[in-house]
Image (tube, rainbow, N blue to C red):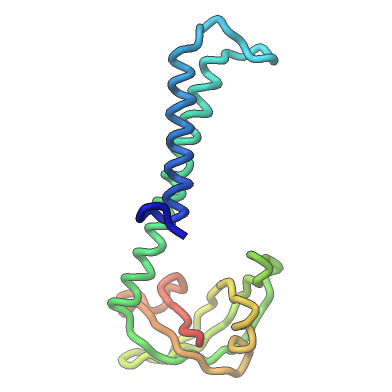
Length: 157
């Protein structure tokens, strides 16, 4: 869903920023002597809420964009290989009812000795049968830091 070329997430960011600007504007218009019902400065309240509404979506957007860049870099420069799943553990965490698991992988990438690494990831329920002990799956690893679990991507079908 888009709104004149802006994705729905961009629309939410814009709404938060506009609301934050409005709160700051109200703070500028408020008499410093006015208080909230619990005795705090109404002017400061407007400034704090406005600042939060502006900074929160900006920080979230930066975090998301950095993760997206890391994934794009891994796809562009990573080396493909195979991984055998040695162990699988449930962390007890769920994201949208999908389990976050911890897997011990034995990774084989051309040019490197096979090595083992633990990786945590959230797996869609429909893909969970592909991630079971004894199975072999495709991986992509960063050639500059192949043992860094954050720089290893599983290629699930």
